[in-house]
Length: 344
Image (cartoon, rainbow, N blue to C red; front, side, top):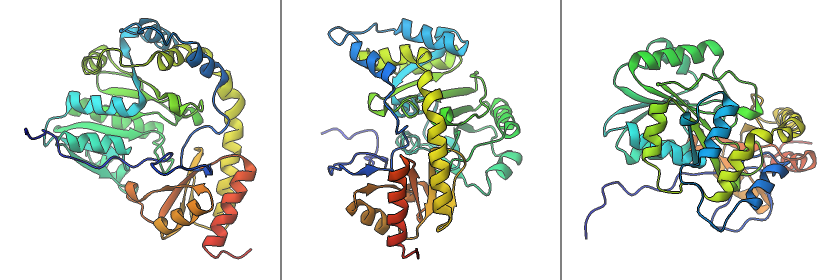
C-alpha cells in the first residue's frame, strides 16, 4: 500500500457540535443568536437544487464585487473560510517555509500549515506589537495570519499597526491573510485587498447561518486566480451560492440585531467580571479565566451548558463564551458562580 504524502493529524478543535448529541444551550459558537437572517434563509431555500450551479459563479462574484467596489475577478467564493485557508497554504507555502500568526491562529490555518510542512510562529499578545516593530516580517516569511478581531480574545490592531503590518508584508514579499469572520460585529479598519493582502469573509457568523458555510475571499486578481486554480468543479452547492449572491441586499438584519448582540455581550462581560478575570473587547464572545478548564467545561456540559475550552489557543486556564439572550446568559453566570464556589 502506498504511503500518504501528508502526516495524519488530529482534527482542529472547534466549538459547536461534536460526536456526542447536545440539546442544551450552546455558548461555544460565535454566531448571532438572533439568526438565521430570514432573507438569506429564503435565498437558500429558493435556490435551484435540482441542477448544477454555474461553475464560474459569475452572478455571485459580480454581486459581491460590486458591493465591495471591486471587479468580479477579485472575488473567490468558498464553503467556509477553512477551505480558503487550506487553499492559500497549498498555493503559497513550501515545506519549511516560515509562517507568522498575530496571536494564536484559527485552528484550521495551523493545521493547514502543518500539513504543508511549514513552520508556524505565534506572536503572543505581549510581544506582537514589539515584534512587528522590530521587523519580524522579513524576507523568508511567506504568510502572515491576522484574525481581525482575534478569536478568542477579541483583540484587534489599531489603524497604525495595521498599516505598518501591510507595508511590512509588501517589503518582505509576504502575503497577509486578514480573517474578518467577526468584523461585522465591530467597526474596525480593514486594508484593501492587494497583491500582498487577502481578506477572508465568513458572513454566516453575523447572519446566524453558520450551517450554510458561506465564505469568500477578496484578493488581487492574481491571488484570486491562484485560489480558483485549487478549487474543484462546482465548489459551492446551489444554496450557499444563492446566499452569497443575496448577501449585499440582506444587511437590514444586521442593523436590527447587532446592537442587541453588543448590549447582551457587554452585560454578560460586566457580570462575569464582577466574579472572575474576564477579557472582552466588544465582540459577541469573551474569555473567562476559570483554572481547570477541562473540569469546568465538563461540569457545565452536565448542566446543559456548552462553552469553548481555550487550551488549543494556548490559554489552558481560560474558556470562551459567546453571548446569548439575557436570561440564558444569567443562567451561565449562575452556573459558573456555583461551580467555582463564588459567594452570592
